[in-house]
Length: 414
Image (cartoon, rainbow, N blue to C red):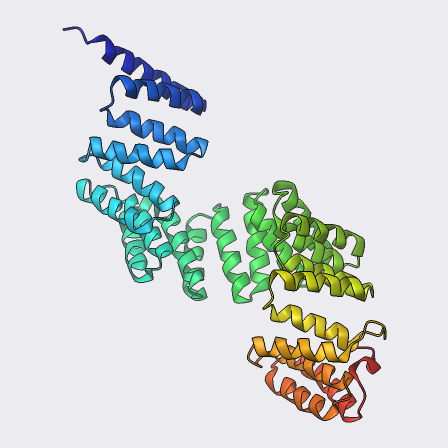
């Protein structure tokens, strides 16, 4: 018995749409699928395929609408729920994504990869207990994707600052697959956050040995090299990162800091200028640029940048502290201002509930500049008591002796 003409035309359009999709001509695919739907509006698979095309085009609203329609037309198809769960997760609608994972698994318990997706939904939605339970189940039930599940679990451990557990998961993936660049990168990120800079640098290098164009491994290693006083290598890594990701502000910030550390003030200013241009509402680029101006003894420009930072974040304790330090210790008498230093230092301490030793040190310098040496001694002693850094304690102790002799911090070239 011959098929009716509309069915034949709809099938032809679906086939053409599928070919266009495979050829990455997503606009043509959408047009073909849409015409097929007008002829036969009750075929679930066509809506799903058009949703895939919309996703490739970045039209997530229409994609989700089509996935909804696919589920309505074929509620017994686990694929519809699985597809919609993935998109709901991407749109951060975690509770709805979990519900779709549950429906798909109820229809087809063999879709064990959805246990991992459900775990990520729980993790990103803040339900860590349920996430850990699902990650464990996914690792056991889905060995083909166990490495991916372990890495996602490691990220959750990292977010919870359980560095030992996070490292264990990342290390297990490395041991099972020594060519897994993402595992090295993640373990490097964990070690970096935990303070193991040398270990982090080694892992970032291992990631780059497997994947030489891994941008964030380059950036991570640049930060490690910056911390370990290798600014030239740090700047080189940041430059390679920016070749791969030229619009990322963090790359300019890191390279600018490395260039400043290497004494390349012109290069550092160029980087921080670009960072300001890319993110004019962020305060960090202004603070970094101010530090370069300060190093060049351009105190007025440094103050201007810190004031710009305060406009963007009027509660930035660090910015108040930096302004106070310049006004309290600047060797230029036309710039120095003890009263303003005292006001800013006090505000920095208030914002941190008087718990940051370096801010207390600045307040002591401001008091000394105002001639209030008794208060300067008091605050400097508190700064010394509250710091565990031996280097800083020695530095603070030197200034304490100045204040006891009723001399301001600037008299020692501070």
